Image 1 (tube, rainbow, N blue to C red):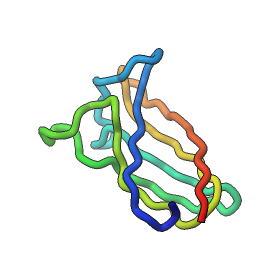
Image 2: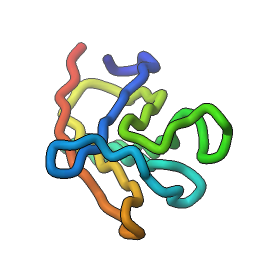
Image 3: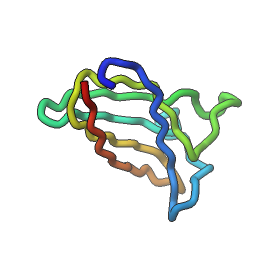
Image 4: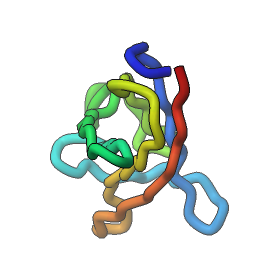
Length: 97
């Protein structure tokens, strides 16, 4: 929902299997960029927790606390590192209100 802070959990899989050995990329297991279609409203989010904190697992789930500025269709881009390669996964999510 626009304006409401929510937890968003993305799960990384390879060939249908959960990836549990994500590598730190820019000091995190993932980075999320969100762009709204039409006006390109921009949100950049770092995940909850960090590598080496004794709590945050290196996958398969990467959780972000995020909020979008208003209704619309958003493109989400998750950057993460696995097998020494930075990868990007893209998603589309509509919001209402």
